[in-house]
Length: 173
Image 1 (tube, rainbow, N blue to C red):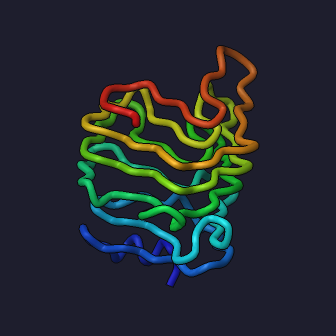
Image 2: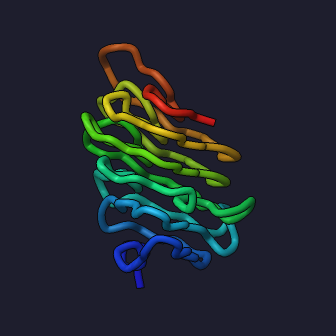
Image 3: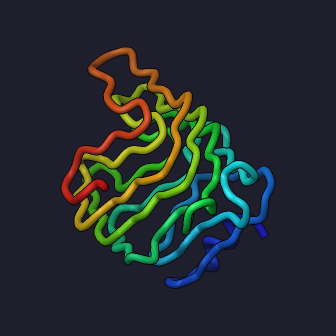
């Protein structure tokens, strides 16, 4: 079973536990409400690589996420996300919302390593972007993560947030 297959089959309250290893996604993983994605040994042993020309994860607009929605459940159970390089848009690895969409509820991203992700031709979020054009209600919590070598390749405008770009409603903690 792939991570994508597990997410497609998951329902609110499910925990997807990923064993140590290297995993390459075949496309952008659209996160589902109430699902927890965690590794069994942590980011030093569990690596997720993005598909060519893609980011790793999208929290889709028009979805309400409850407090169960998490990446990296507890200390030491996150991932290393590497190689995210979408051809356009903000957020080399993870995006929350999309232009003109609404995301509400509670999203937690914790205990992960973001390394070597690129947001090409974008103004922000080499690793993670919370879209300013999206309505973000409640909270997005990004904590106890490490960021290295995440870059923006924008050649015009003012680049903001080599690691995280957040510009919207709600709370970032």
